[in-house]
Amino acid sequence: MEKNNPFANALQQLATVNELLRIDKNIYAQLQHPQRILEVSIPVKMDDGHMEVFTGWRSQYNDARGPFKGGIRFHPDVSRDEVKALSAWMTWKTAVVNIPLGGGKGGVAVDPKKLSDRELEELSRGYMRAMAKFVGPELDVPAPDVYTDPRIMGWMLDEYEKMLGTHAPGVITGKPLSLGGSEVREFSTAQGAVYVMARAAEKLGLAKNSTVAIQGFGNAGSFMAELLEKAGYRVAVLSDSHGTICNYMGLKVAAVAAHKKNTGSVAGYVGANNEGEKHCLEHQVDILIPAALENSINAENVNFIQTKLIVELANGPISPEAEKIINEKNILIVPDILANAGGVVVSYFEQVQNASGYYWKKEEVRSRLQEIMERAFDEVWHEKEKYRTTMRLGAYALAVRRIETAMKDRGRN
Image 1 (tube, rainbow, N blue to C red):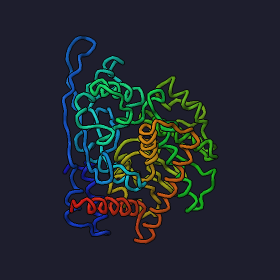
Image 2 (image 1 turned 135 degrees about the vertical axis):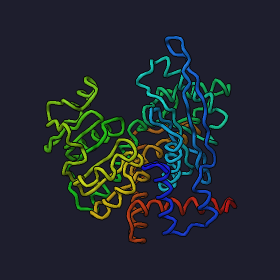
Image 3 (image 1 turned 90 degrees about the vertical axis):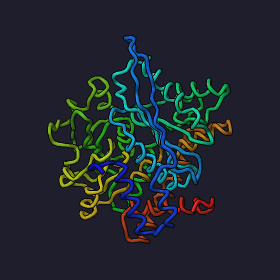
Image 4 (image 1 turned 60 degrees about the horizontal axis):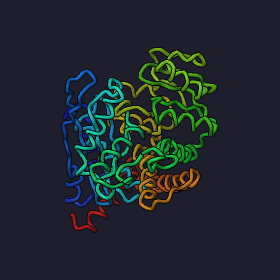
């Protein structure tokens, strides 16, 4: 397999937890493969009149605990293996927070920044048309992911309902509030991460004014920065694909966000040192939050890391080689399948509200989210202590055991 293939990483993690748990061999064989992977061609007539054909995927990994669940990302680097890996991680993620869902993931290989609004809408509706027979409120429920948002979910919902001939708001989550979306969903991934980060900081004796570096100032990263600043942490380092800025007294997050909106990057922000070639990962901070893409922390840069706690807001941001080095340094990692599960928890809340036709207030959603995330952290910590292992393996042990139980109860072994 190619180096840093995300699905190879996912299988390596599963193999490690199998050594710990000794999963039923028939179930372990099944867990190494998605139940179904769909590949579709999506023709879009571009504004200049020519036809462009995009490739899309949907990986439905495991539905033993409930309908497949997972986002759809639009990104030029999306691949079949990436979608498979993300769907595996979603399977573990829904299990670790103990919500009644399985795992899936979708994507289209495209740079959405190069599309007009009309082309983007055509692509979004085309993806849903291609997948409509394989999704549904009780089958597979997509959601937003990298470079997709509530507007795109609204287009997909509308296309599905046109094909179905009836309203079905539960087919997709992360929708606009006007179409049955949930309060808090917009920043739920970051909010859930704040709850588990606070728990981890408490375990390590870190103060509330600890310094934080966030690698990736996109959707989740910017919300994380805003929430942490409000909670009293010092957001000292921020980066995006164009540059890194640093102020150990604490950056003014709203001002950085306004600067990025105007210029397209955090680079050049006047209230901080612009670090040029010095990467976000190289700064000495109490807490590091990778919020970019897979394998952003790897064998080439891991030795630069100087922190006490890593909270994985992104999916699979640390390569297996890098993780071995981090563990040797006794740096605590709160793994992605726990740290960023707030998004899928509130997506589940959205499904519940859609099914009942009754919608909760923002504080009710926050309260329910906090309860689930903190309980999940405590359960993962218990597994970590029980097996004298890492938090990642503790989370995997908890999740895979729950999936194994569900598969056995269904007679799938």
